[in-house]
Image (cartoon, rainbow, N blue to C red; front, side, top):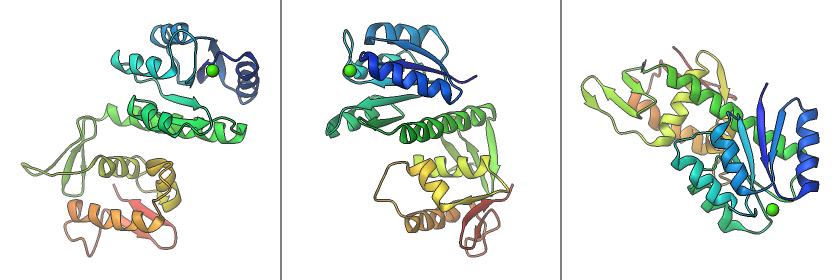
Length: 228
Ligand code: CA
């Protein structure tokens, strides 16, 4: 069962979230301040943490920073207050995986929870394999290295992420919308056109002949498919 920790000092919010998430089939635990939240995250094994930013004893930011400093990779979604734009940026820099702004709809929150859980599952799976061959490249998704023969190939983090996602879905069609959602997340400036250009560049690195791709195929009107 998927275990979620809710760190929230406001009782109504905490209970409301707990009831609804339990109804969705998640196992729930709580903490009502930052200090006990941090302790629970470090001592137990949660699949995801919902972390309020304004908390007694230790702020959500400090909790997040401490969790990551301890090498703990439990996915964290921050619950930020309305209008605190700076919080979102800071939160993501401190290692949070996503954020939702209060007041949020339950539907929005659950969609975010599912997306973050899916991403963390994918990165768990890919850590198992050390090095994979994709087209002419040998790729290590754990260390983010790519080689063409003995030559190191420069790739951006996004390129690794897109390739990893396509690879884990190999031989299945991945829609442009899925790529947008899974990789670009909340970046509103990205369009499906951005993705097409991105794939063109990726092909230059992995295909023998980028004009006749054999690895990342275009599925017309839908998206892409990695053959492997
Ligand atoms: Ca609060």
